[in-house]
Picture 1 (cartoon, rainbow, N blue to C red):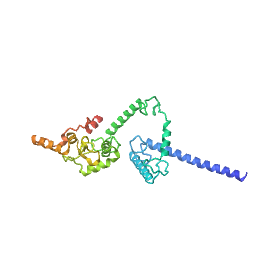
Picture 2 (tube, rainbow, N blue to C red):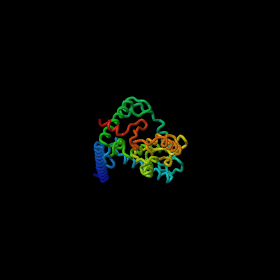
Picture 3 (tube, helix red, strand yellow):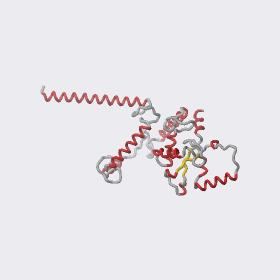
Picture 4 (cartoon, rainbow, N blue to C red):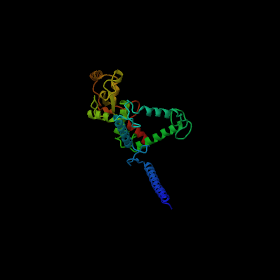
Length: 291
């Protein structure tokens, strides 16, 4: 056999061995990831989690932070975040990348079928009405199971007492509502620690998710901003009573009410029924779920 022919056969055999080895590793990795997902573990950190995704919330947030840091670094270097070519504009992507994305999505037709059951659907959602109802039912069942297990209904972690959320999830909810971004929850936590976990008016101990509410020092309806410097932590009762009043106006009303009426027999503010925006207390929800 000529040397060139034997050399070609040897190279072909070596390439087949390498390909078979890589294919075996890929199959092993797929099986290992599938076993982790079935066991309810994160495929990145292997920790137990209760979310529907293949990775836990901590790894998702960490990956998002790394992506944002990478994009910021690329932009500081004066490059496009997609093709990494030099780009001096104010946007993240260069003109060519934006044009390619525009041409890519211009010819895309609206999908007429549900992505879960392949049935007919409207153009507003990706899934049909039946699948949306099914997902809502599954979320409701999962929420009740977490409440019975004494876990946080947001992340599945440990929660405090009869409150449905842990402190972090409650702060993220307030941050999304008042600051527009759940990732700024640490600013609200720092503000709460600055107030020593006490109400700015009554001095009552605040527990996020139970009796703590965010109040605007200068109401938004009267020109106040939504920045963290215009926010303060108060109780639900104080927040509902203050409404859209300024600080001096609210104190004037409080002093006039206190001067005219005698001191009540139950000075404990925790005896005031907690009803905020029509939602019952967390202990009532957990009690109803366990019955």
